[in-house]
Image (tube, rainbow, N blue to C red; front, side, top):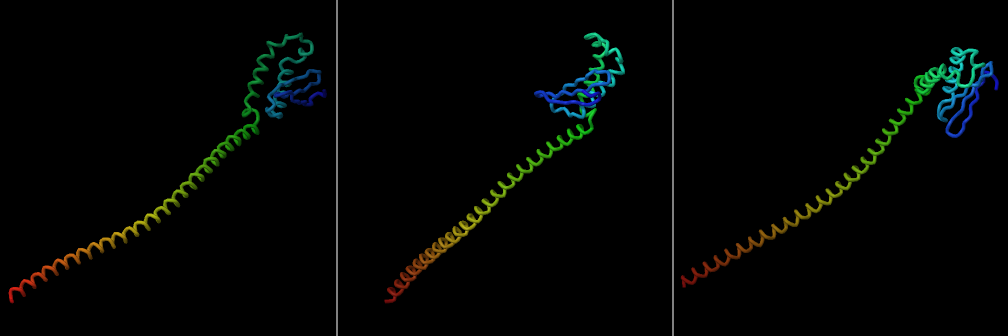
Length: 182
């Protein structure tokens, strides 16, 4: 491995990021496969810098697990910092904001489409009501004409009946008066 050069590869759902230094130490950072590579590289470089600054040449001669206590807080601090992408990567922060806005916009578009469907059904119902109102008006006018003719027939029948009764009364009255004259 060339010192200072980044190497990255994926193994299943994880990504492995490696870098070596001038004294032959290799630093390894394992992240989720979706973790941005630029953030992983920045994190591993910071790990390398802080490790050399705090441990120095002891790293070459250290025995297994002899630096655990000294490096534990260092590793925890770096992991905590790089666990929050918004803090270390402005591009990731903007991407997260864009994704959240995109979700809101998708919800708005879905709601607008639902409103369009509702509006279409309301328009269809209004057209049906308009047609039914036209049929009702036509039937009402026909019924009005029928009732007018029926009323007119009734008035004519009553008028003829009254005339007939008057004619009979007048006829009987005339006949009686002529019979009395003779």
